[in-house]
Length: 264
Image 1 (cartoon, rainbow, N blue to C red):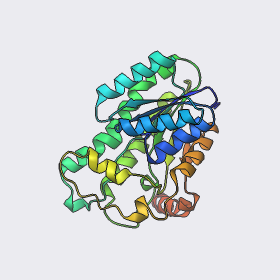
Image 2: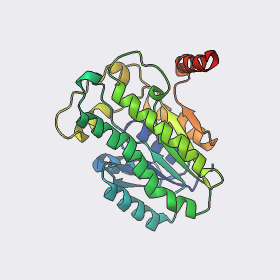
Image 3: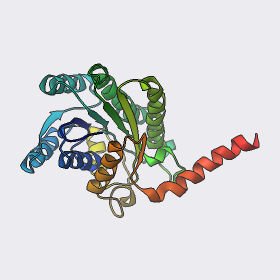
C-alpha cells in the first residue's frame, strides 16, 4: 500500500500501540484520524502530528457506543471522501482469575474487545468497499490468542482476543475478491496506559491486577511497535507480529494441536 496521501483512521489511537501506529503513519505521509474515548488525548496527539508537519484530526469515539462510531465515520467520510486504512485497535484488559470473574466482567470485556471491534468495522466497511480504491482493515488481536499463557488470570482477555481472530478469519473469506484487504496484529507486551484506560471504562469497581511485565518493564516502546506494524501493513501482510521472540511459544501451542490431528 502507498501511505503518502492516504487517509487512515486509528480507533484507540491516543496512547499505546494506537499512538505508535499514528506516529508511524504520519511520518510516512498519511493523514491520520485519531479516534479515542479519551478525546483530550486524541486531540493532543493530533496536534503533535500537525506540529511535525503532518495532517491529523481527532474524534471522540467510544467503541461501546455505536452512535459515536457512526458519527465519526460520517464526519470523516464527509471531510475526506474515503478511508484507506481502518485500524480497529481499541481494547481493554483484566487479569482477574476466572473464578473471581462475574458475568458483568465478561460482558464488559467482550462488549469492548469484540463487539466494539465488530461495530467499528461494520460502520466503516460499506463505504470502503464502495470507493473501489484499495483499502485495508487492520484489527489488533494479541499474541495471547495464539499461545498458552505463562501466568493465570488471562482467561477473559484471551477469550476476547481469540474471538477477534475468529471474526477476522471469517471476514477474510467474505472480503475475498473485493478491494478491501485485512490484517490481524498479534502484539506482545507494549508500553501503554491500558490498565488505566481499562479501569476508566469499566462501570463499577473491577480489580485489574496487571503485572509490570505486561504493561511496563521490559515491554516494547509503542513507537517501535507502530513502526513494525505499519511496515507490515505496507507489505499487505495478512498476519502481523511485533515480537519475533514469541514465535517458539506460539509454535509450541500450535504443535500440540497438530499432534492431536496426527494421532487421531
